Image (cartoon, rainbow, N blue to C red):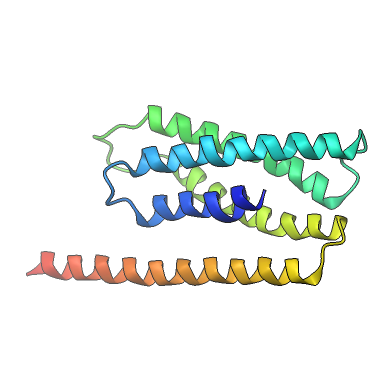
Length: 163
């Protein structure tokens, strides 16, 4: 699940947020989410269910995991709907787009909280926690740097349009 939630999903979100200048950003974003994250989430959920031997939904990790599982596929479905109802002549973003933009990062944050709950269930070593939080720190730093970069690019393009 680490690969799904801490590598693939942030990559897909970063592409949607910062890679809109790429001609195929939607296809890349969608492919990562459906074929990468979606596949790994189904595999992880299935393995977790098998490992729990019928005592599913007993821990916070399991309960939050089911919520994330359902939310993930609702989010993928909403992305599919957005793509197929896209109108290049629209004058504003439809509400469904704003919902998708809000819930994607929200699901990711929930997954970031849920992962260490699993560490606790399996009595993971402190080194696992340290690595995990260091990785989240790196993702946060990358997000901040890319946000600043995007701000400067947009600011400079606005200035050049003014003159």
